Amino acid sequence: MNSFLSRTSSWVLALFLALAGPALAQDAASTANVSKAGVAPGGAATASAGAAAAPAAAAPGSGGGDAAAIAAGDALFKNNCAQCHAVNDKVVGPALAGISKRRTISWLIPWVHNSSKVIASGDEYAVKLFNDNGKQQMPAFPQLSDKEITSIIAWVTSQEGGGGGAAATAATGGVTTGNAAAADGADASGGGKYMDVLLIVLVVVLIVLVVTLAIIANLMKDVLQGRKDLDGRDVEILEQRFNWAGLYQSSALRGIVGVVFALVLLYVGVQSVMAVGLTQGYQPTQPIAFSHKIHAGENNINCAYCHTSVYKGKSANIPSANICMNCHSQIKTESPEIKKIYRAIERKQPIQWVRVHNLPDLAYFNHSQHTQVGGIQCQTCHGPIQNMEVVYQYSALTMGWCINCHRETPLNTKGNAYYDNLVKLHDKSNSAVPFTVSSNGGTECSKCHY
Ligand code: HEC
Ligand code: HEC
Ligand code: HEC
Ligand code: HEC
Ligand code: HEC
Ligand code: HEC
Image (tube, rainbow, N blue to C red; front, side, top):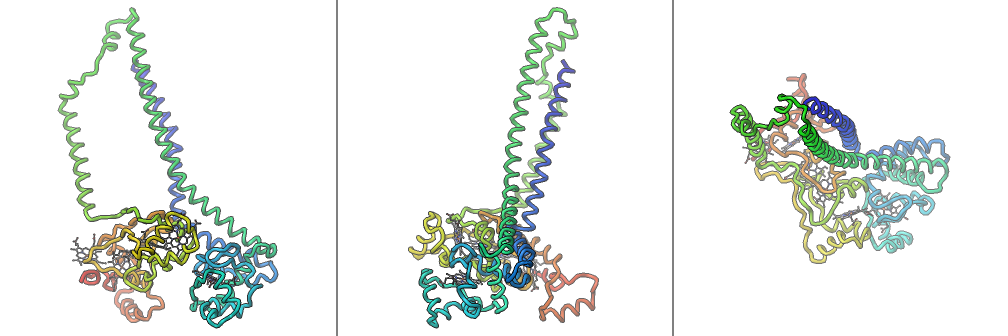
C-alpha cells in the first residue's frame, strides 16, 4: 500500500513537471515578446522599417528621386501629415497619390506652408479643393523648409500604387514590416491568454488526479478487507485511522500555524501602510472609450497634437472636443462613442475625462522642463502609452521616484547656452562625477516645494 502510494505520487510529480515545463518556457517567451514591443513600439518600428526599406528599393529606380530625400520624406510625412493623409486612400484630406502630376512643386510649397493663404489668394484649384473637402482647414506648416516639403512629395511619389517596379517594392516592403510588427504585438497578448488557459487546465488535471487516487485507494482497501490471509500487522495498517485529535493538540503544529499567520498579517499590514496615498496602476473608466493605442499607436498621431502645451508649459493639457472634431467630423461619424463627442459639443459642456495622474498641490512639476529642456521621452514617465487601450498610471509618482531620477540622470546640456558656464564650473571642481540634475541642485527641497 505504502509503496503503491509513493509510486503514484512520483507519477503525479513527473506529470506535473512535464506539464509545467512548456508552461514556464511559454512564460519566458511571452515576456521576451513584451519587452521587445516595449523597446520598439509598433508604430515606431513600422516607421523606421519603412524608412529603411524605401531607399534600398528605390535606389535602382529611375526618376524616383534621391534615396536619402525619400527616407527623410517618409519620417516627415509620418510625423506631420499621416494623421490626415494617406498615399492611396482618403483620410481627412485627399489621397496624395499623383500629387506631383496634379500640382507643380512651386504650388505645393506655399500650400503646405500656409494653405489658407493660397485659398485666400483666390487660386481656383485651391478654392475648389477647399470646398470639395467640406471647407476643412489643413494646418499650416511654416516650420518645414522647401527642401523638406520636396522630400515629402518625393516620398509620396515613391509610394504611389502602380508607379513602377521599384516604387511598388518599397511600398510592399513597408506594408509587410508593418504587418510583422502588428503580428508581434498580437503574439504577446496571445501568449498571456495561452498561459491562463494552460494554468486552468493544469489545476483541473491535478484535481481529477487527486480524486482518482482517493477512489483507487478506497477500492484497494475494500479489496484487501475482503481477504482472509492477512496477518496482524497488515490488518493494523489497514485499519489505521488518521489521528486528527492528536494533530489538533500538537503544540509544534499550533506554533507553526501561529507564526505563519502572524507573518502573513505583518506582510499585508506593511504592504497596505506603504501603499497609503500610492495610486500606481490607477486606471479609471473614461466617459468615452478613447484609445491611445488607436490614435497614438496605430495612427501615429503626435502626442503634442492633442496635449498641446506639453513642450511649452507646466501642464500637458487634455484636448478639448474641438480637437477631436478636426478628424471626427469625418471619421467614424456613426459610431456611438463618437456621437458622445457631438453631444458634448451640442450641450456646450466639456467631456468629463477622469484625471489619472495627480500630484498633491504641495509639489511642483513642470512638463516643459522635462520634455523640452531635459529631452526626456513621455514613455520614460508614462510607460507605453501608445499601446494602452485605457490609460493607467505607470510610475509611482512618489518623491523618491522624482529624486532617484534626478540623482541618476545627466543633464541635457548640449546646445543649451544656459548651461555652458555651469558645465565649465562643474568640470573644474569634480569632473570625475557626471553633471546630473542633482549636482545642479535638483534635489533641493525648494525646487519642488515652495
Ligand atoms: C489636420 C489634417 C491635415 C494635416 C495634418 C495635413 N493635411 Fe494636407 N490636407 C488636409 C485637407 C482637409 C486637405 C483638403 C484641402 C482643404 O480642405 O483645405 C488637404 C490637402 C492637401 C494637399 C492637396 C491635395 C490635392 O489633392 O491637391 C496636399 C498636397 C497636402 N494636403 C499636403 C499635406 C502635407 C505635405 C502635410 C504634412 C506636412 C499635410 N498635408 C498635413 C488636411 C491635412
Ligand atoms: C487624439 C488625441 C490624443 C493623442 C494623439 C494623445 N493623447 Fe493622451 N490623452 C488624450 C485624451 C482625450 C486623454 C484623456 C482621456 C484618457 O485618459 O484616456 C488623454 C490622457 C493622457 C494621459 C493621462 C492624463 C491624466 O489624466 O493623468 C497621459 C499620460 C497621456 N494622455 C499621454 C499621452 C502620450 C504620451 C501620447 C503620445 C504617445 C498621447 N497621450 C497622445 C488624447 C490624446
Ligand atoms: C488626427 C485625427 C484624429 C483625432 C484628432 C482624433 N481621432 Fe479618434 N480616431 C481617429 C482614427 C483614424 C480612428 C480609427 C477609425 C477606424 O477605426 O476606422 C479613430 C477612432 C476613434 C474612436 C473609436 C471609434 C469606434 O467606434 O471604433 C474613438 C472613440 C475616438 N477615435 C475618439 C476620439 C476622441 C475622444 C478624440 C479627441 C480627444 C479623438 N478621437 C481625436 C482619428 C482621430
Ligand atoms: C519626468 C516625467 C514626465 C515626463 C517625461 C512626461 N510626463 Fe506627463 N506627467 C508627469 C507627472 C508627474 C504628471 C502629474 C502632474 C500633476 O499632477 O501636476 C503628468 C501628467 C500628465 C498629463 C495629465 C495632465 C497634466 O498635465 O497634469 C498628461 C496629459 C501628460 N502628463 C502627458 C505627457 C506627454 C504627452 C508627455 C511627453 C511629451 C509627458 N507627459 C512627459 C510626468 C511626466
Ligand atoms: C526620468 C527622470 C526624471 C523624473 C522621473 C523626474 N525628473 Fe525632474 N528633472 C529631470 C531632468 C533631466 C531635469 C533637468 C532638465 C534641465 O533643466 O535640463 C529635471 C528638472 C527638474 C526640475 C528643475 C530643477 C532645476 O534645477 O531647476 C524640477 C523642479 C523637477 N525636475 C521636478 C520633478 C518632480 C516634482 C518630479 C516627480 C513628480 C520629477 N522632477 C521627476 C528628470 C526627471
Ligand atoms: C524632485 C522633487 C522633490 C524634491 C527635491 C523634494 N521633494 Fe518632497 N515631495 C515631492 C513630491 C512629488 C511629493 C509628493 C509625493 C506623494 O504624493 O507621494 C513630495 C512629498 C513630500 C512630503 C510629504 C507630504 C505629504 O503630505 O505626504 C514631505 C514632508 C516632503 N516632500 C518634504 C521634502 C523635503 C524636506 C525635501 C528636501 C530634503 C523635499 N521634500 C525635496 C517632490 C520633491
